Image (tube, rainbow, N blue to C red):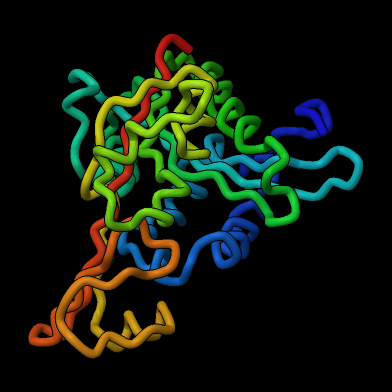
Length: 251
């Protein structure tokens, strides 16, 4: 399986990618991750940024096996000043920039989803490279990414600052998704500690996770990168997900 086995198709060419996106999100992401209020802007992505939403089409079957989402935005400060609210910020910023007529000067990754049977076959790298190529096609020199380290959920108590320093025996990031970006030339800038914020009642969190939360405190939840905080007196659960700013420069 090589990149030559696939076509990159954007949502302008294939509008049904929007529905496929929703279906794949239900497979790839746990239910609580789909409760981020900023995710309502996904309709805006397909309506106003169709060129930057794409699928990986298997040539022999015509099947879409992966979907990528990105958004153009404007940023002129040093990358070390990128905000703490990473994933939420890039979507809100990109939508706002378009609404106000600000001309974008870079592209930001949002997510990549791969159908389960094609995971672990090197397509993550194909998808990130495709995102870079899309940026180049629009004259952008930079791709920023609020990367969600995929294996951090195995170490929920470890700080993200410590986690991102872990390396494999080749000196690359220990984390698989960070390693994909690093292998394509991205550098780690810093942690964005409030990249995604999800809140809900205790009952909602029990529904989303299938767990019970009998006391106030912190709880580990499968696929969460850090513990969620439950406050029974407020009838609220809060999940502040940290991600990692990585930057591809000189596209």
